[in-house]
Image (cartoon, rainbow, N blue to C red; front, side, top):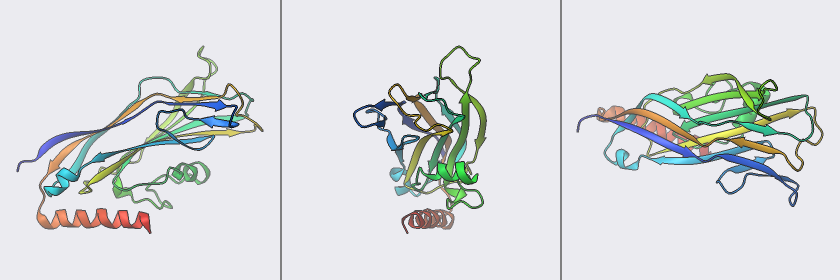
Length: 222
């Protein structure tokens, strides 16, 4: 079989979290997002590669991208001395805990970097963005991009499934009760794209990739 080009995609719905007076907390609505607390939200989908795995094919990433046309909003009802939003887009060959964003925020340890429990080789796509309010733009609660960094490895994988995450974390400091009626956190729907090649490698190389995928997945469940 000849090598062939493939474009893998994962879709994530918009995040539209509003304050619910009945529960006294934020709620992300019915779009499929998980709320870990008032400030942290995640959405996960998967890409099935089992058909390729059954043919003993490996996927070699060549280019990655994020498409999320739209505007990020954060509306806090009680003024805060510090507010910013962190957005992580991640595609990995092993499942992860969305709480990794807390390590990034409190200890400046990014996924796959020194001090992290995640393996760099498992990250096919990784992008971090930080946004802050822009009061000079006449769009209330608009969040403007301040920093963007990639942290993916581009490592080939023989995994039979990819895990695709979109994580939104709002940081607020200096406010005693920022989440009240009228509070809003919104991010646009997004598409994660990985362009690459399905390749037929030497049997030994492919077996080693399969072994590595198994070991990484086992480490996540220990």
